[in-house]
Length: 441
Image 1 (cartoon, rainbow, N blue to C red):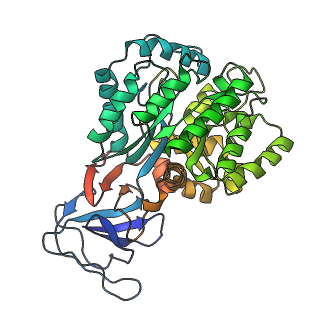
Image 2 (tube, rainbow, N blue to C red):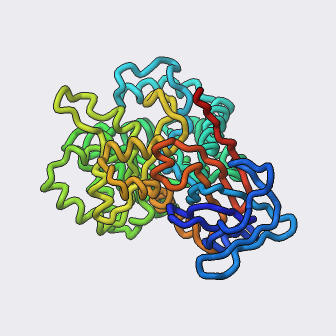
Image 3 (cartoon, one colour):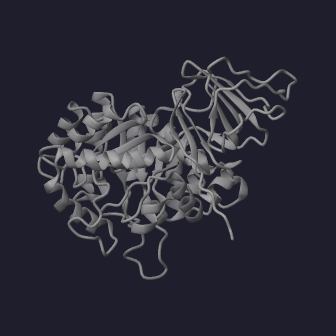
């Protein structure tokens, strides 16, 4: 396969990308001096014709072989596929069932979900999750980490998503987090359910220490889940301090455990919205530990902004962790969508452009260069949080997974909410989109 006429990761120059045997074989070089587009192909067209052009270095452009697929990117921006490092597929598409969350609080969402999960079946979870994944894939997502509620004696949702994981692997990688929505120590047999979830195939160990009955329970839950992860060679992703309470400081415990066990690159702290309420003196001290630990962070701008500050009148907090400051200090931060039409958020389209747009506004990352680079929060940074960065990215020799957006750079794509023209996985097109055409009369 040859991909013609694309801006690779915001490169101003237009170039080509060659894919051989499912991996990137050559990246870059100009292909704009010869008619590459076959007659009759449109903006989202594919052709198998022969084309040549001059590289900037004076060598000839990549020439297609007989019968080889040639994609004309028409000046679009080519990026690694989007990563959603935090979503809840088991709860997706349940908004309003059995009731709507009219208060908009995290706690009412948990209460409503506790009722809804009583009626879960494998078929129900698989159907909703599959429809949600299809939505996400259409928008260029190929890597997904889903938290799965395991405070359920039957582990119904986990069993459903374990089945679905193998069924969708041709177009998406799915990591499953054993997530104790109602706590590990604060839910009957919570520890045993976590251990069962791991033995039955969960990829990642989760937690929710700020929701445990006491601070001591929160600390004990973190020690338990980190020990479980180390013993079973699992990754860790904890819903950590998702509350506006400045006294909620489980993050320092998680980071210390990660540091002491030497597993920082395998640990993610999700949400950490309490950090938006910490005083600067404490945060300054905390950042030293966070950097030493090497852990990643996932902020969920859409849902954090929706759920956060609900108990404030005014001033009203933003409900977000310190994204800009973490990033500036070299600490890995990714963005996730979190909830898609469920008890915690009535909206959601599986589109990471929505997530990034809210993220750059809420975190005040609105400089031109910041916006241009903001795709990293849903690509490279997400891949690092998922611990897949060794085989992720636009680089010769890596798996040929990529997307082409209908814009010349990410700034334009974010402004226009542009389509994903192509999503390519292991050198095969899995999604193609014909752009809409609007005529003013």
